[in-house]
Image 1: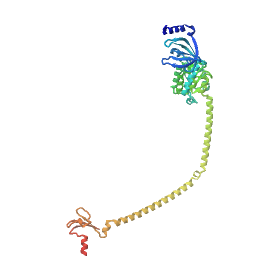
Image 2: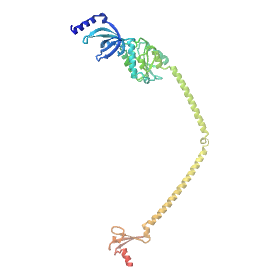
Image 3: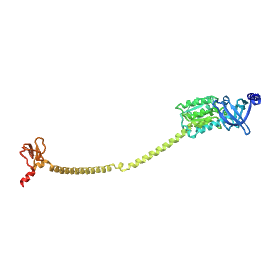
Length: 405
């Protein structure tokens, strides 16, 4: 026999065994690989042996959880030979986590993933409005949850405005429909808070609220979200992502809608505090006015005015005296400067018999005999006029002194 013939014979034996056509195998996943084609390849092992396994894309698309190394599972399928490698392997059709349900495992895996991202952090939680104008509701229009919410809301605040954005709350298309309804309310500016609710049910019936895209849509909503899904013991991913988790839809309405009686009582308390504060303030101001009424300025204003008038008179006399002294000092300084100027004036020099000689041609003062020649016309300025002269000759002072000697 050839290798191919032997392998085909063994494959025929395995494929023809009715027991191996539908077998369930329990083991731990190792060497897990999720191929880009969508197929899953892994090994199932226990303490004594291991077997190769494959789960094709069409089958693994129905898995509610994500397989990973170290996870113990129960895999159902058929045993056959992969002829290329000559190895037998398990072709898995179904798979469940050993010891827990697949939905519970999927919930825990998604919860851990989103928690690691910080999507559930308390710092992200928004405060609910103390007095909402309009409350948006995302739920089934035919479910008991809507009736419970409306009943509680009307009882607590009869004239509260409720806006329903209807959505499927169960089935394969429910997550996308809930997201659509939530986004419609998020786009409105007149909504103050949103209630996301559904009545009780099994984990399968509530599974639409364990959707990753819905959790992100809740955090992206512009308005605070109160989530009331199922009963008090039911916890969904939507509950963890919401700003407030309510035990039931009715409890969600209690969180979102204040009691009108409580608000009225609160208004009464604040009104009383305001009245008391105003009375105390008025009494304090009246006392202040009374104290001021006995002050000298109000009791005897004429005395204060008399004192101020006398002060004004004193200041006026002082200012006038100071001004007179300054004027006299300035006058004396002016006279002194005028005397000095008079002493230095050329006219005063001329008055004492001196004269100034200028050349008639250009008016230049003749300060030296070298500046004129015989026959030059000169002007001699004396105290009371000008004498026109002609230079007949000139003598130097040195020549005069020698002649005298």
